[in-house]
Image 1: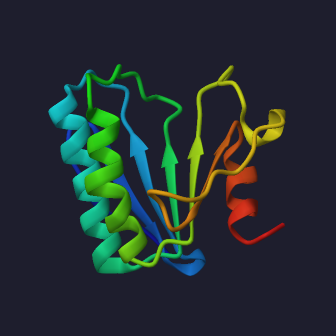
Image 2: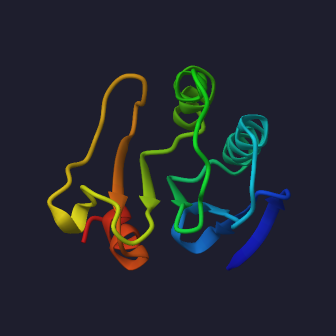
Length: 134
């Protein structure tokens, strides 16, 4: 069963319950760093409630340039919440032409600050297969 569980002006969060995936779909709208942070905090909140094994972030329409220290905030304030929620893998589906996706020889990332493995993909189906180890 798939259902939209939350959203705001910048993204929607969908729970794919049967496969243990919580997905953030970024919307093609302008945003500030504050809007980015609010959306990731919403995703973390939903992850804490639903406790999915996997997080999928569809960034194919994401178009925001981060200000200073935004990624440090993400690493310090959001990534630990994903881990505490029981996430074991985080996949990003990236726009066409993004370098170093798994399809183009990219590597999985793991370790501090995350307690889960992260990978970047060009194709959604490849990300979903990676979750279950195919």
